[in-house]
Image (cartoon, rainbow, N blue to C red; front, side, top):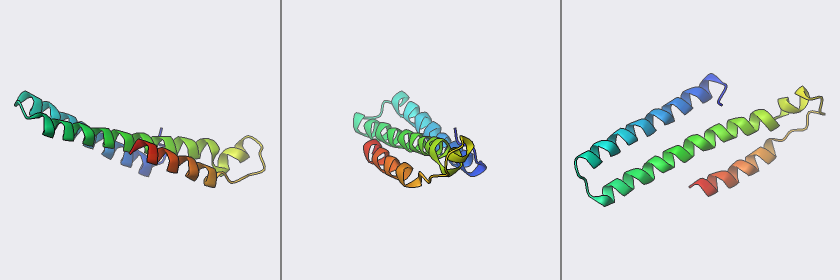
Length: 96
């Protein structure tokens, strides 16, 4: 769960975009739109959902493995930002 006000704002903005896309898709289906535009809208929704999931995952990883997490459990304050960055790079590539 995003904890900073900026992270929450970004997550809510993404979620509202997804909601708007879902509403548009529903209207298009009710109107009998062709399959190609429907599929395009579904792909856009999937991309938006993956973007939201990526942001929440990154927030979770940074909170769990970030420098403050080590100090909280009595660690030596090892900086795991590079590791989190690497994991996020892989996830972003996978979720495209």
